[in-house]
Image 1 (cartoon, rainbow, N blue to C red):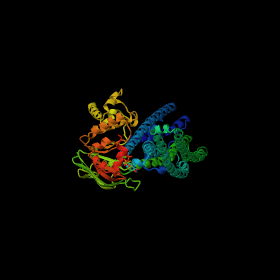
Image 2 (cartoon, protein in one colour):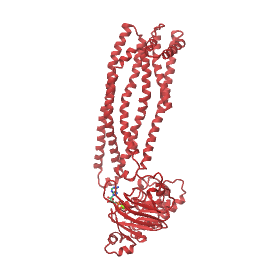
Image 3 (cartoon, protein in one colour):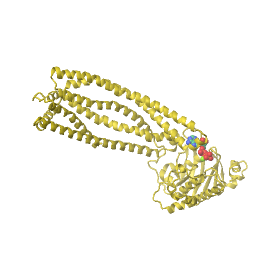
Image 4 (cartoon, protein in one colour):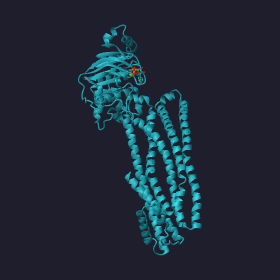
Length: 599
Ligand SMILES: Nc1ncnc2c1ncn2[C@@H]1O[C@H](COP(=O)(O)OP(=O)(O)OP(=O)(O)O)[C@@H](O)[C@H]1O
Ligand SMILES: [Mg+2]
């Protein structure tokens, strides 16, 4: 930023100089000799400037006259030409450098903003992601950040470069004729009024525009990830229409914004030209009739005033850009300012290993958006080394129950204890590193099989990965791929079969080798052979560990040390398979007959 400002100052001064040089050039060309003592520069600037400035200007002027304006006319012409050449060369060098340094600052700010928003996303609770559309979040971190970028440069230009350029040329104009300069500023209040008014409207419209962009991204994101269903239901035309509706909305809004935004420049410019024309007439009079102004000075004055136009015009659009950007910035800061609900307490306790038991004590839970209890006064304990199976009909609250252990959500009532510590008082990453989690839907990343199994850990020897893969019954199918463990599995593991995906996600959980395993058994029907392979993998997964498993398979249930039967968020039965099945009127018996018997 400092370098950019330095270059900007040099750039502005050199721009001023390059315009100023036209005066002696014109004088030389038209063979006008300046009479000593009639220099209007010193005269008019002495009206407004303090003494030392007048002195400095006189000194510079004298040096300039002694070195450049001495010798024959063609020598002077040559020296002025050379000076103009050098001035323009340096001006452009500094112009280039200031643009580069400015881009450096601008892109750096954008990078940091993106990183900050992204890092913050990871601190937000699960509920946040269920309430926001994915496309909307993506759009904020991509599109909205881009819009903010515009204003980083705009603020810089607004605050530093343009005012500086204005000061330089204004100084030149004033030094030539104070009267003419003041006259040319009549236009200012009008254009400022217009600029402020337009800025206000734009900010509102820009918020809507960014929301529309987010809608487009959302539709895009949803249909691309659901492409199979779109094709299967033949809904291409329907989705096209939906998408086109969004793009049309966006198009209309952009045009409206363009209409508003672009009114500022022409109005300002027209007003300026009105003043300019009057000024040319008035100044012309001063030169021709009064002869109080030299023609070369009047031309120099006009050059300076015309150089003032672009920065003033720029300033009129800078406000627009800032308004648009702050609308976008609001949307990004909505993410950054969302407080993480689930985070470490200031005095969070570390926990390194699991010794005794997990305990649910009168746990109740409802999701944010409804008051209906999904879990109602649930109490049970899971001792170290045991397998606890959770069964119940669909929607009973099983997945919700186990989501509370890694604190994806916090209980609304009651508490969960690990070795006697309320999990809310433990360090979150300590807690999660005790848990291996296999979710109901397998989530894999678009990377190699190797990296999916050793998720997040680099430089792991292949041997260790193979051990996990073998235990998950995945090694055989992996080695059948031409690229083996280096096979890239596509987004969400799309290039694998359902059973293969499950076994990779089991291998991933096994690889971490955590003391507690939380396992939401997938209900997806597999053929007999994969079923057996997956089942074997699950059994190995549970060996020598404490396991909480949501069970859909009879063999899993038979292995369990304790079965918890959940119905509408309440524990209705608890015990071993043999005992529960014996209760003729229990829910377990029905579930057993309907769900478990055949597989
Ligand atoms: N994010 C959410 N917001 C609001 N309600 C939810 C949310 N997730 C689940 N629910 C509701 O909570 C209840 C329990 O859901 P849960 O996923 O725990 O059931 P489940 O027992 O795992 O069922 P299944 O066997 O079908 O997986 C359901 O009625 C569901 O509608
Ligand atoms: Mg579930």
